[in-house]
Image 1 (cartoon, rainbow, N blue to C red):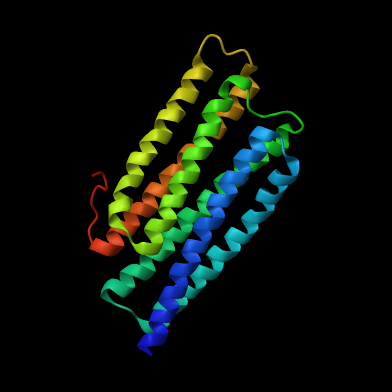
Image 2 (cartoon, rainbow, N blue to C red):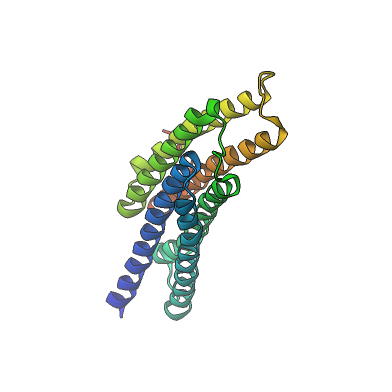
Length: 217
């Protein structure tokens, strides 16, 4: 019975990692679609969000079912409760990638990003992918050392977000209000994606240590 229970726990952990990989691919493809005005790739990301949602619904049902059947305590209960919260964060990250792809689709065949902001958005996409890559490893190995790094990585995203906003507020901005709204939303999508990754890293830290602590080194 206990072996079967821990097999199910391992299966839940594997589903979370699968979600993280899908989210990483989604934000990467959404950025590519956005910067390259690639309608087919944008549609692929939008459709793939349903897969992420489906995995979350299945994972949450399995987790709740396991809690009801096994009435776990101590670290096992902590694992299951944490899994529910992590799946919600990952699902939201998938939604944010979906929103980026919808922005690409909405402005097609034009590029949604003005030329002077392409380097910033490119870097935001790179940082998002790097954070999610690291997060996948943190989740798989329950690596508290690398979990400590993710909030520091998020500082880089916050810096890029501030840089984007400064460009929008500059007197030299010449692309009008509609483009400014688009870019404000895009910046927010990437910034929030990184924030959700920080939340998951904190949950992994809690899962391993049983403590809610700042994850800054």
